[in-house]
Structure formats: structure tokens, C-alpha cells
Length: 574
Image 1: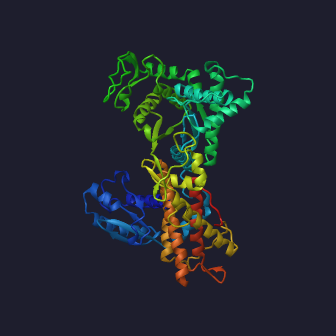
Image 2: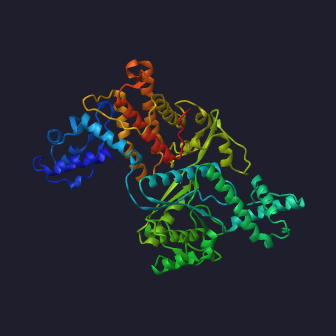
Image 3: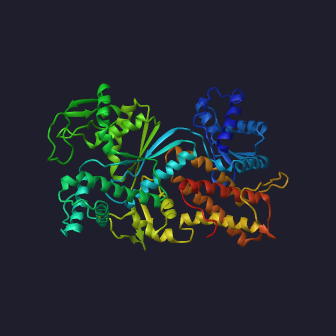
């Protein structure tokens, strides 16, 4: 149920039937016409720009058209009791009590799915995909939570969503990782000093991995790295992925699928993807220009396979092979995305770190080439997270080596605070994570403030000995809402619009913003009752009026739906 869509449809239908009376020759399929919430100072329920849009394309006076539309709507639609013409011709509409009751009852009857818009599409969301060379760091947390909440949001709207993790378990970094573990094992087993060299991993977690491998491979002597490599790779990756999965689980995140880069290579998916692109004349042998800017001493003019990504909007064509003829990282990624395309997803979403912005055009071009422009890839970049405590940048113990781990973060604050606050700004801007703020029990701590609103509602229901699912009878003769209740109801009406926008634009941060605004309105109304007797909810251990009870239940419904999407708990006592 979305009242904006419902009333837009009613207004458009009415205009269509009366276009001759309104002297409208061109309706332009009602493009650009919207119904939304008007600014608070107007004290109306809805606003429509129809007269402005239609007057412009029909070259008539918008205010004259607005007056005609006002009369037409009031005469034919019983939903509205008053219409005001604002500015150059906006129609501000006030709903009748009967219509308000009808809309409230619709939400109460369909509380579990309020805001849902059935889409039924197939999505693959790849997120985190941290190199399997150690535990997650704080930067990974933001992308992990963004991807998980986006998946929850799309699922709420009826889509089929696969949450996927791409394991980069192939190449030199894995060899360096295994070498680091080997040297730590030699240190533990044979007292050889671990000497930190370039590209090795220094973190204490490497020592823990080494101990586990020694314990589970008691007969292995680990005398030669090359001979032990396959065992070390397998065991080290397992330990590392166990660490990552453990961190993710503590954050409330579980993936549906883990995809191995090594298996991709073994199954010749890169060769298959390149051959497919060759057949379609998107890959050919040729030469690339040297990199722009600083000279790359390792670069030399070499004939190689090149993907013609400029055909699909990229800035330059891309090499599929290195100087030695082996596949580039990009080529492996093309193979991986061909596998995704073959799994019949309509939409692919890649959640990337801040340092991957320059990679977006080439992989988007590849997906367009591989799917004949039928599969849409969206890449969402999560910018850096900066930690603050006592107003200063905060450095936690770097047990993991050269980064701050998710485990360290979880020791400082709980999962709920991390999940909510990581979404408290748009993913494409840097986030300041303030430990002092998330530990406060005040309005300045958004997650606490939203949770506290639900706890207050729960305490109210305990006091009244009522259940949130109890039926509420609203009598048209007695129905009356004060200014606080109207503000809350109008905010509740916005919920489906928030869900729609957040889903369409892949902007889950809109949900915590909205929930905080709704909680603020509720707390303000609660406080008003402490200041003025006439605003108290309860009198003589009974609710004063059912309308108030209905408004409070609506707040609880929306907060439950929203926090469930965010994966944040809702305690009933605080």
C-alpha cells in the first residue's frame, strides 16, 4: 500500500476523463507528475504538481488549470475535504477523516508487508570479497553491512537475492600469504627468527594459523616451502576464511555462496569468456599505448589479447594478458562475471572498496559485452571509515598487522551500533565513526534513540495489558488527531516511498535516516505529555482514545520493518 501511488492514479484517471473540460490536448502519459508530502508549514497531507506539468506542455496558465482541477477533484473524489493552491500552482490536498481511517486500517491489516513493492527479480550481490589473507578490517565492515542490508531491502520487496563472496585464492598474494605462514611455522617449530620481508604478512593472526596447521599436520616437517605449498595454501586459506566468516557472523552476516577464483581457473572459465568475446569481435590481438602519467619501467610494447571495452563506454581498451602471456586480474574477473551471467541473474551488484573506483567502467563494459546488454551491473563504492574517540582520531591495537580489525571494533561497540552507524551516511562519502556518540544513551546516538522509541511503546503496551496485534476500532464520529499525531501519521505514510527510493537507487542509508526522524517525532509527542496533561496517552490506566493507540501501533510497525531490514535488534526494555 502506497497512498502516493494510489492518489496519483486517481487524479490522473480523473484528469484523463475530463481532459476536454480542462482543455488539455497533450497529457504526455502523465510523465513528471507526482504526489508527495508537502512542506510541513502548509499543514496538508499530500501535494500534487499535475497542474504545473500539464500547463507547461499545453501552454496554458498553471493557476487557472489548478483552480479547475481543484473543483474537479473535490466534486468527484470523496477522499479530500480541502484543497489549497500554493505557489505557481501546486495542489495541496487534505484527506477526510474517513479516508484517514481507511488508510490507517489498510496498514494495520497488512502490517507485515507495509511498504513492500513486489518486484520478483533475480539479484546477485557480491560484497566483502576481502582477500583471504587474514581477518576483516574496519573498511570491510562498511561494505559488508551495506551489501547485507541492501540484500535484506531487495528481499523485502519480493526479489530473489543471492549474497555472494568471491574468494581471491589464486596468484602471488596467496603464495606470499602461504610463505608468511610457512616462516611462522619454522619460527614456532624450529625457533628460526621470522624476518619481515616485502609482501609478507606480519600480523599475529599468522602465528595462530601456523599453530593450527602444526596441530592438524603433526607428521609434516615443513622443511621445504615448495614441497609444502599446496598443503599450506589449502590449510592457510581455510583458517583465514574461518576467521572472516566468524567476523561476518558476529556482524550478523551470512553469505549464500562462496565462489573460488582457483576453481574459476581450473574450470577454464577465463578461456571460455575470452573465446566468447572473440567470436563477437570484442577481443582481438593488438598493442596498447603505454600507461599515462609516470612511466612504468616494467611496461613494454607487447602483442596481446585486448578487450575492446571502449565499445561499451570505457575510456580505453583493456589488456587481457600480461607481458608473459598469462591472464591479467581483469581477465579472471571477466571469467567470473561470465559465470554470473550464465547463472541467469537479471541484476548484478558489486560492492567495492574505496580504491576500486577506477575499475568500474571496464567491468561494466565486460558484463554488457558478455550479456549482449541484457544483464545490468551496478557497482557501489563504499568510502573509507574514520574512527574517532574523545574528538580525536582513534587508533586501536593493530593485532592484525597493518590494519584495524573488525574484531577490535566489535570489542568496543556492539553489532547493532556498528550496523546502524555504518549506514548513517551515504556509501559514497567518507564516514566518521564516533565511539563516544554510539555509546551515549541520548538523542545524539541514532541507534539508541530508535531502539528506545520501540522500548517505550512496548512499556506502554505492558502497562495497558495489550498486544500490538490487537484489533483497533476507529469510530468516524469520534475520530480526531492532534497536531503531533498528524505529523507522525504523515511520516508513517512516507514509509513505502522510502522503501521504493532506497531499493531503486540502492541507497539503504535512507532507512536509518527515516527511522531516526520517525523516532524523533514519537519522542517529542511522548515528552509533550509530560509537559501538558492534555497530550498524555493514558488516563486512569486506560488509553485516552483509540486514534492515539493506532498511531502508536503504526510507529511500532514501521520501526519493526525498518530495523529488521537493517538487521538491528529491538529490545522491549531499555
